Image: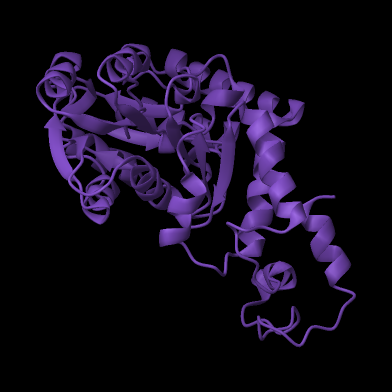
Length: 345
């Protein structure tokens, strides 16, 4: 029985409990179904049978020891991951300009930050991959308890996780991978290899590329010695959003279905057509769904030209522009981008 089936069953009961809207009163009409599924809370980390089975099924799909649902974004997963790996005064290896949740996680653990370098691409004005030499030097010269690596980067560059894992094993260090932007990787051979194959802990954002609601996400563990559930209890609410939990279950089911995989395949095909039909545009990155482009003008000017044509980008640097795509990016939307690129370049 799925979480949704449980909610349907409970609709026949008259509740005198929280939440106070009783599944009927709603402030915003378009959220009516959310109110219906928003039942009395049950601690996510001591779940009822249905939620436990749902997460166990997700673990089977991803091939992990444990997969847990997150309703407070990948940031909460990174923090829980660090709390599961490190204690006060331990050293944690991070990139200095990483997402703030990496630094906050280390602070909350009472640990110390040790910094490694990322490779900078002057041609694109973005950081790309972990500098392996810098990473190993820090492992060699410091007693590191855990390392946090972002792969893919915002712009879609993937680090050498196999080599990084070998180094972490050599020096006795846990590997946490922030794969927030790589939630589609386990479901397509045409996309980069998922970090699930190498890392002790992987965090993925369903809402970034996989069609999930903000801020639904997942934390995966491949190390039976790490208690991510205990760590999550320290930082997350005991009143999780059941509508969001339901969407996570449905989201994973869709991605793992033939329909979902075909959807991803079509997305990739449509982006390949876009690239072929825009020969004057330079495309970069390891992940085709991150449309990182460069033209003969600056990144800022290219961004302005795109906006004047009705296209808003995700991120702009001095020399390149990033346009994110995902499950919700259909052929019509990409065709619009193609027409604008042909017109302005």
